[in-house]
Length: 108
Length: 114
Image (cartoon, rainbow over all chains, first blue to last red; front, side, top):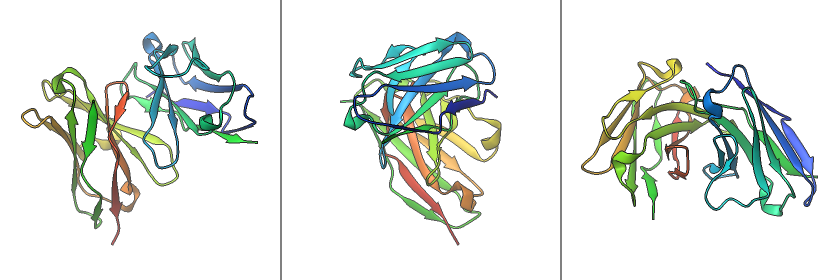
């Protein structure tokens, strides 16, 4: 089973700042099959990025994903008030699929 | 529009079983795999398995093998997740999600308590 470790656990930033979130896999993720989700309290997750770097439909271009193999990054170029949430990575390249433990982006 | 609508909240006693439904609409039901994901209170997301609505085959992580069964009914475009031998640690919100997770159900709260 691939273990995904997200860092940091919490990121305290101000609106307008840049956010860089990391997702590290215990072994290489096949075909870079890595997803990023955003989740707000009381809501289902929202798909942001798939295939490590492809933005999902309707996702603003301030969200970008990068990386390959075992190291992946989600970057939010300029934080908007609605971006403060918890972010999860998930690998779907091998079974069982697994999630990271999440990174909370909070207002500083 | 594409929607996944789940069944309502459940309260169960330890040792009981629960069956949660997820009805799809707005797309070809058999064209996308369906996943089940759960989230315990204040915790992260946990992948519970995947079902192919076309052939009905399902795959589960070892943690849930023997205790979780996913099925589908193509006549009603509905997938089901049944969990047996419930314990308090199974208290969570259970979600169905299409494919890569572009569409999610609203979540079903399952509470296991004596």
